[in-house]
Image 1 (cartoon, helix red, strand yellow):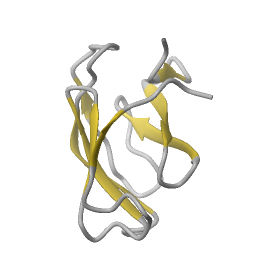
Image 2 (cartoon, helix red, strand yellow; image 1 turned 180 degrees about the horizontal axis):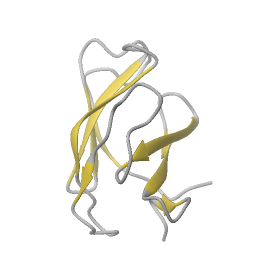
Image 3 (cartoon, one colour; image 1 turned 60 degrees about the vertical axis):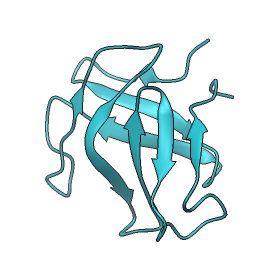
Image 4 (cartoon, one colour; image 1 turned 90 degrees about the vertical axis):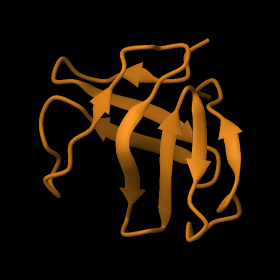
Length: 90
């Protein structure tokens, strides 16, 4: 089961977001175009990334902790305010 995937040697990871029904990218070794960067616990079974991930200025705002996506209440899709496990990538 692959719930996150390494995309480059530069420390980028992707996962499937059930709320957006798309992949989201998380940079861990270099800042992205918005100068954001995350830490990763290197656990591919129960990943944790910090700080929170904010896609498109609040469209999708969440934390990934111990393999769970914890969507913030203000997330602008149907899963706002819920906690769900990361699922296998389609």
